[in-house]
Image (tube, rainbow, N blue to C red):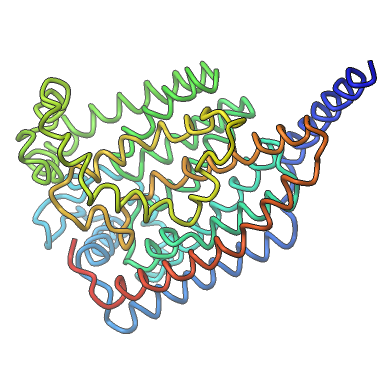
Length: 405
């Protein structure tokens, strides 16, 4: 009888805690995290500006985007002299047009580096909110946000020139937060921002829609994500890019062994899976996945039999990006020194948050409310050490020997 009463009290405490976390996830950030985000943005901007000042930035891709955005700001056709096509024929990234408003103030490439630094740093905000919403305490949620800011991929994509898809990183996190809070308008706005950054992100958005619909039981947001993602993929790949470039999507050449067009590649993936099994099961693939998840692998692995693998469903929307990188003929697409793994990061952290929330609930029901906290903080120093080692080595590679991609 006493055990039943204790169990009921624990359930009541959990309900109260979740309600408090939902309310707090909508509130202002802790001042310490605000300072961390501002500091990270300043460091990111200074590092990318220093790399540019040392003549380490490249025409591919910084020069391409700088020229296109400048031409838009001057009300001219954004024709890239480096690629020989209209800029929309490259990635169908309409985000260039609002970015051109900054060039109307003063045309300088440092605007792009600043936008990139701020966007990457702001990803810590929805990461913290998602952690609080999942039931993590203040310390654990702050740790999640700090791990995000220290993540090697985040630092390296900031260092390597400018790429519009980095703006999609915090937008994806914000979209997930909006879906879990049932904020349809905010979710739709975040999704539209993601789609404006690059055509290939439409696949990630569609996959996220499926995940929200079936796994998260967010049918309205899931349907919106699936429909918008699928529609933009077809419009961008079959209409916009061919119209402005006069040819197929540029990235198709990286998968020549699968076909000569987007539709042919998709058909061969379904009908001839033997063409890709060799690449998926290769050592190169396992090495890429291991390095990508190394800083948080201590959380993702199921160390206890009591843990179900349901938290790994958060990685479902990342599968298209992982397959795109793994199946590519170009090895640098699987390097953490470049921007290709950006769409994976939000869902990687979502899986980390889900796993940690599951651990907290297990130990709370078992009457040990402090173990979850101590275990999290115990692994943080090791995580930070791994991240700093990886970040320094990858940053050196990115700064010293980045090829034109």
